[in-house]
Structures are given as C-alpha cells and as structure tokens.
Image 1 (cartoon, rainbow, N blue to C red):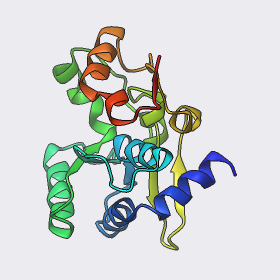
Image 2: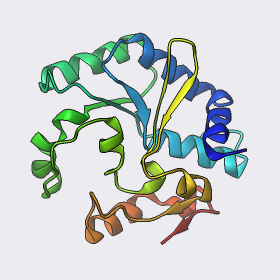
Image 3: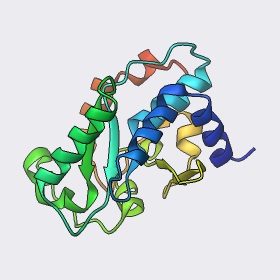
Length: 187
C-alpha cells in the first residue's frame, strides 16, 4: 500500500480527524484543508499503536483566498468553525496572506504564496508539509508537495524553504517529538 492510501486509511480510522474534515467542509471556507501537526499527530499516533490520541494544541486549517486577505474574514472563518465544533481547537490561516504578517511574527520574510500546495511546500518540516480535505463525495484529497516519506518514516528534519536552523532547533526543543513518539528520528 502506498503512503497516500495509508494516510487515507489512518484518517478514516481517526474519528476526531474525520470529524474535523467534515466540519471544515461544511464551513464553506475557500480551498480549506486540515494540515500540518494535526495530520502528523494522527499518523504518528497510529504508527505507534496509541489507543488514545496525543494532545493536540490546535487543528491547523489552511485555506487559500487571494481575493480577501483581511484578518476579519480569517477571524470570521475561525468563529464559524468554533460554532460548528466548539470542542475542537481551530487555528485558521489564509495562506494567500502569510507574506503580510510572517516577518512581524518570525523575523523572516516569505514570498507571496500561490496555492495550498505552494504554501505546504514551505512549512517547517517535510513531515508536516501535508494538507487534506474531504471532497463532496467524501473522498480524501491529499496535498503533499514534499511527499509522505518523512511523515511515514517518522523523521523530523528542517525544511530550509521556511525555517532557519536556529528557529528549527528551538521548534524541535519545544515540540518534544521523541518524548511523545519514541520511534521518531530527529535529524
């Protein structure tokens, strides 16, 4: 079985993630995907055989709408998701607007992004460069511009397109990957 099919199987077997995908789809947010850490957690929990999901700080929702870069619409989409599923920790970001705030938050620049796939290709580690969504027929669509090898190999490595070596080291120390998932390799 290839990694895309393996990912789809894990999503189907992960109730909270499947529910999140359904909620995101019902919210009618442009080109919205559940992505990054939520997917990593679900996959690494499954690969470790955990019965209880690991703690999830948030469910990242990346969407792409170049026509409306306002913080207000992003906030409105967050509120919509919170109304639909108030028990889930939503974090909604318009990837078309990242270049407007990234420098202020991370003291580094990022070029304007052109799509969800382009955005995902720049996220901090290849293992989180993944976005998924449900289409109207409940098929799971997968966007993984850097592939799924690191995700399924449980490898954490820096993606130089977005994160500096110093920021990567700081990120790894705060994430505590090996404490949470003992079989993970940090390189």
